[in-house]
Image 1 (tube, rainbow, N blue to C red):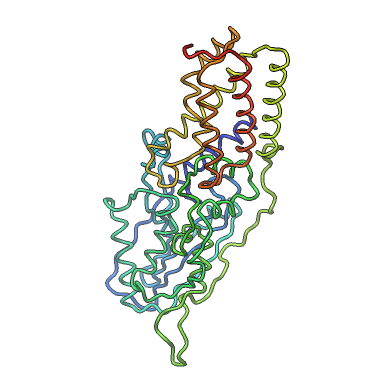
Image 2 (image 1 turned 45 degrees about the horizontal axis):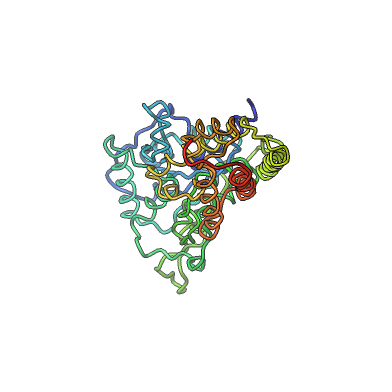
Length: 411
């Protein structure tokens, strides 16, 4: 059961897609105090939080540090709050209907939560902010924090806690900020970017790749890559204003960076299932091929094997079918549904009934065509690790069922 949870949690982790979203939803929010003017006592910074070990925290987190010394305000503005106890929470996640909430927390409390998880925080203070600019950002934060404005429709890749913080901090400048766009022409795909965060967590990577579809393999722009906190941190570190200093040099966007919380945990990840997804796929595929060859030689049909395979394929296919109706833009079109096919669940009874009578069923012909289309789909989509090997073994079984038994049109 422990290993099963290790496999299922990554699948739900991608549905959460919280990119390090703050799970401490019962935290006491500290509302911002309004103020009449902005001066040198006010500072605004970008907070980039280190990734954790849990599937939902592998991507890090971003917040804004807002300080007004004259008003005694020292808070973290956090766009990663959500309420797990809302009705139909899981279903809303699956269909992309989850609303996240902006929270304002005392800065010490925010740091304390990450200190408890032994995760570091890097702070970058915004440079060259005029009193008018500070006022504009602070007023926008307060407007966002109104009860009617706090919630927003969360999207992991395009509208998350990091992109919200970025848009808030660059609000006064618009196109006056210069960021290195050399990566613009041929950036990594969204799938590749998530792999950078999950490379030491193979089962989380598998869960991600099973749910992500064709649209996750398109090249990204620099702005699209900023959904990841550390990409935004690095871009902000290199960014400059269009305004020049007295020597004619571009003014940096950031004054620099400092660690406000040093990471304490070691680099060892929690133990996952001892075998990799690829190893498991190879073992399962070999079992399928061996059983199929034994059936070929003995002229028998092991209907129990068909029952297990079709149930596994069909139930997995139901999840991918649900993704078709999701509002997540990168999961709707997923060619892996040709392999993990819900049709298997529909046909499980007639297929097993025919197998017990030593007969084939038209499902195997249809499924063989689906598998061939699945292989062709490699040109459009990068599949989860091991799925091509599994598909090959299932194609062998389809061929055995079609040609080694008398096929019937009706079950």
